Image (tube, rainbow, N blue to C red; front, side, top):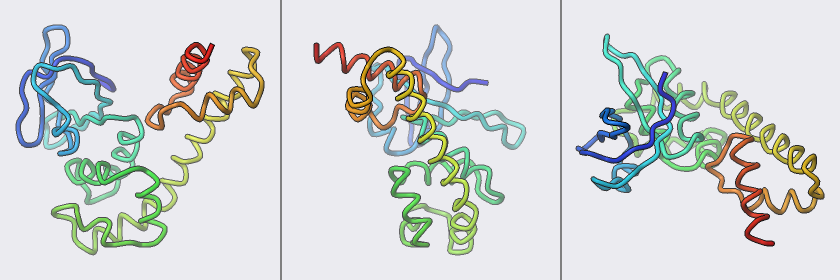
Length: 188
């Protein structure tokens, strides 16, 4: 399973790009937001979801693990394919999506081409619990990162301050701790 790629952008079209990594070219479907940031010849990092669809493997790429998590949750909903899940994951931050689901905000999903009112109802119904679980996992990782920093000798206040500087797209405990340690080294 390919869950992360880093490489040079060889080509791009209206819905995908080819990312070269060690002489291999990987076709990765990405959102319009990601395509806008992608420049041929430059390096890019993508968190990827692997989908086996119509007897054909496909890779979907995301700028953050959080976007990938939303994609995986939405793609698991019956009747929503990977292209629709890709579009939904790119609508905005996880908090915006959670708010739209909680408020049953149908207009939030109107930006997604090809998803009608019935599918939006289904998405809202099925995402309610899944997004809460995702948020709990994120909170658990923050707690784990806080405990790790304290065990390294930092005070709770110092650890909390450092974790506030960590970019929101970093979700894994190890990534959070490494970013917090960089914060400490910059402020010495």
